[in-house]
Length: 568
Image 1 (cartoon, rainbow, N blue to C red):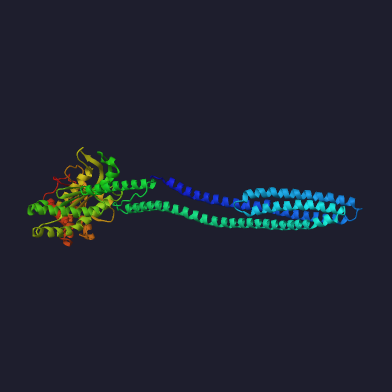
Image 2 (cartoon, rainbow, N blue to C red; image 1 turned 120 degrees about the vertical axis):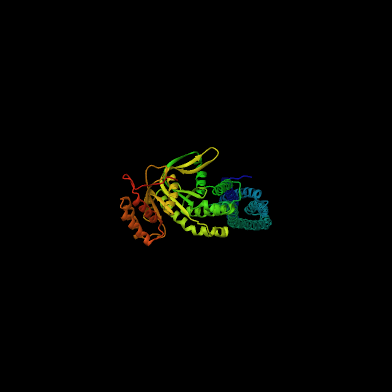
C-alpha cells in the first residue's frame, strides 16, 4: 500500500486524536456518574432525610397537642379550648400526610433508578409504607382517646391507651430506622462518588499516559522509517559528493522519499555512466574535453571561437635514427613511454594533450581549461617539467629495451607559441575533434623544428615570453622568418637550470646587437667570450660560425638581420 508522507503524518495525528477522544469520553462518563451521585445526594437523599426529620418533629408536636387535649378533657369547662387544639392537631395531621406522600413519591422514583444497584432502597420504601400505616392507626386512636376522655369513659380510654403507646413506639422506631437507612444511602452515594472521582483521576492519568505512549510509539515507528530513509539518502549524497559513484541507496518506503531515493539512484547511474564515458574516452582525449562535451553537448557541433591561447609541440630528437636502430616492438614501447612522460608533464600543469603525431606531442593551454592570464606561464612550466622527465624517460627506455638503447641519443625539442587561435570542434559527420587552429599553431610547430638550428631545447615566441612573466630566464635567440610566413618572428630560448650564467647572457645579447649592426669583430668577441665560459653553448657556436662566414661573404646592403628558414 502506497502512503504519502502527508498520509503518515495525518495517521499519527488521527491516532493521537482518537486516543484523546477515548480518554475524554471515558472521563465524561465517570464525571456524569459522579454528577449523578452528587445530584442524588443533594436532591434526593438529603431532602428525604430533612423530610423524615420534619415528619418526626411534626409527630412530636402533634403528640404534645394530644397530651394537652387529654389533660384538658378532664375539665368539662375547657371544651372550646380542646376544639381549638383539635383544629391545630388536624392541621399537623394534614402536613404529616403531605410529607408522607411527598416522601413516598420520591422513593418510588429512587426505587426505579436504584433497584438494580442498591437493593436497600426497597427496605426504605417498605419502612415508609409501615410509617404511614402506623401513623394512620396512631391518628385514629388519638381521636378515640380524646373522645373517651371527654365523655369520661375511663374503661375505653384505658383499653385504647396501651395500643396507642405500641403504635407510637413502632412509629418512632420506624422513623429512626428510615433516617439511618437514608443516611446509609447517602453515605454509599458519597463513597461511590469519591470512588468514581478517584477512578477518574487514576484512569485519566493511565489513559493519558497510555495515549501518549501509543501516540509516541506510532509516531516513533513512522518517524524512524522516515528518518532512516532520509539518513540513507544523505549518506548516499555525501558518498557521491566524495566521489563514490558505486553508491546505491535502498528504497525502503513507497512515499515521496522513496520516489526521491529512486530518482537519486537514477541520477547516480547517469553520473556513473558519464564517468565511464569520461574514463573510456579520456584515454583518447583529455578528460576535461570529455567532461565539457558531456556537460555542454552543443560544443560537439562543428564550430569554434577565437581566443588567445598557448600551443606547445614536443618532438623526440633523431626519431628516424632511433627507428632504424630499434625493432618495431621496442620502438612502440619507447614511443609509449615518451608519450606517457610528456603527458604527465603537460597534465600536471593544466595542459590539454591535443594529439600524438608520430613522435611528437601537441598540447595547448587557455580558456575554458585555464585562466586567461596564465596559459603562457603554465606552458613554460610544462616545458621545464618535460625536460626534467627526460632523464627518467631515458632510464625507463633502457630498462624496457635493454642494451639496444645504450647508444641511442635520446633528447627532445620543444616549441611554444602564443596568439589568437580558433578553438572548437572540427571534422566530418563521421569523425570530429576538439582542437585549436591558426597561425600560432603553425608557428609553434616551426619553433620546435627551429631548435635544431640552434642546438636548443625550448624555443618561445615573443608573445609567449611576454605573457610568461619574470619567473623564467630567457634570452633572445634570433629574428627569423619561418617557411610560410612573410613577417619575421623574434624568438627566445627558455634557459633551464642556469645553463648559461647571467653575465654570459648579457654578453650574448651584446653579440646579437653587434651582429645585427654588422660589427663582426665586436660580435665575434662577444660570442667568443660566452664560449670561453660555456664551451657547449650551441647558440654562441652558431653565431660564431655565422660571423666567420659573413666576414668572408658580407650580406647585401638591404640585409635586415633576419635569418630565413627555407624548410619546415
